[in-house]
Length: 312
Image (cartoon, rainbow, N blue to C red; front, side, top):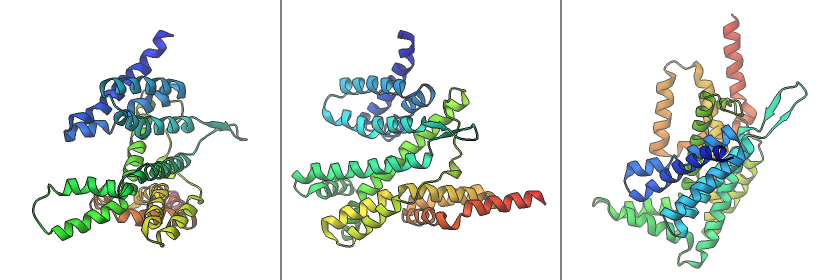
């Protein structure tokens, strides 16, 4: 029994150390904190949910000991531990099908669960900050203003306009970054455990992920609320963007699939990702592509063309 706890305890120690590295304040330390979920996800995908929970519990105790206060522990639980436990729980769900094969829980549906958790977190934060002057928008504005105040002297009006825009969409950007963090850590963990032959679930084909269409209804509802403006518009606009995150990943899967036939594919994809990082707005186009994929079926068409070409 003692030996079975050593591996999840070790993962908990590594996870806590990575999470606590953010307290050092350096950019490299913040980058390390980004991967605090990786050992937790690897333990879960290799040994199951119970072992992942043990690793999470041990890491949480260490975070509480070395960074007293509610803030650090709350961040660890809600931003790192809880989503990883959700990912592991659903990723290891499976059922037998009539063909005798095993059908695993779809990766796309895990993305939807993460999106719903992101919406719930945003709504909880909005409710908590209602007691603060200016609410959650005021808190975000103060945070961003403290950053832009240290910028070089320039067009102050332009900086203030940029801050106001970022304040309005900050919850969606934060949720997208958080979802990306979960996806990257989950995918890396699956790759690591598969490479070491410890994986419970076969490695998914990410370019073929699918999701149901119903989250588009949440996007539409958010868009309707966004049209009212004010606080309701702020809520609706960010809910719309957060709910569209799974479609963004479908859009990326489409791009990766159809780009297999492109000459210089690596250069094209690198350019697309750099453009995304710099401009951000192309993410909306990619999410729209993810929605249109339900009717266009671009991946199926690209696969059929490659098959036909290979048969000639």
